[in-house]
Image (cartoon, rainbow, N blue to C red; front, side):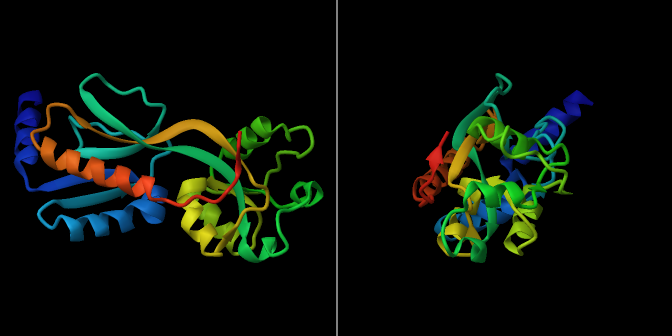
Length: 229
């Protein structure tokens, strides 16, 4: 079986299409538009994107049909992989744009707000409250639970409460006035988005081209001004 898998991997590596696996929210909020631009800039470098829901981001290059992946991780990867840091995950509360028309909220309003949780274990709100030092002043509430960052952001945008989201993934909507930041303190989650691929992959030139393009796109992002903790 392993010999067959290695043979199939070699065939995939010779293919003209790069098969990329990425988390759903990252795909919807950032990656899809960049890959569309990448295709226009490099029509000879086609990328086939598979968006996957992953509670813990992972990829198995030996047994999954992917050439590369974008993962939210701590940067510790197998020795046989190459990786490049795209951007760090900075978490910050997000709400409907209309709710911040008068500016950032006072503490009392944030205390009273309905909390939306983009993870079933409520870890994002818990981490944000702890790092900002607000855990003793703002209780961690039950609130609506989701299993995807995007769902929490959409619910917040529609005025159902305040969710926690990634600053870069929400930047375009915040800058365009489609989302609001009620409390402008962002905390580093300890994880970052990485592009990863097997060192032994034959399509190194095309992988490097994709890497360089994504890094340039990150560098060009205009992020909202916030305090980073």
